[in-house]
Length: 161
Image (cartoon, rainbow, N blue to C red; front, side, top):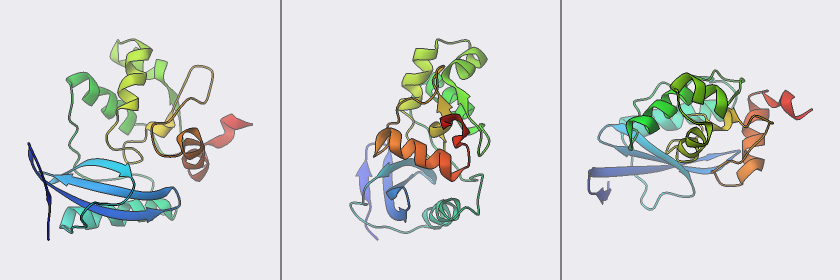
């Protein structure tokens, strides 16, 4: 097993193919640190990566609604707070940047920026966050189309009608 070295430690990567595209799961220090679209530079395996792949595949197949994985969020306390708020949005439901902003006592624009910087999309479901007037952008591959696909997958697409 080969791993990519990073300043904070060893990172392991594993690719999972889903209906939303190929996703790379990134493990660092025994926690999931990132999910991004593409293929792993060097495929690795570990108990955590295998469990994360199993859960992501189950989500993709419609048999899992909530992830249960150790997560590592880099960034400020505010970034972590926004990610915690996003993580708490139930499967099939949505909320607005303003809802999260009010709960954290912060501007909606700052919440939007933190949401866009979410390092673990899908598992931290930033696709469930909307603008005040409805659908907004998505930082993942495919942009808004991928966001819509994720919301339809969760049967949360009623806002589109």
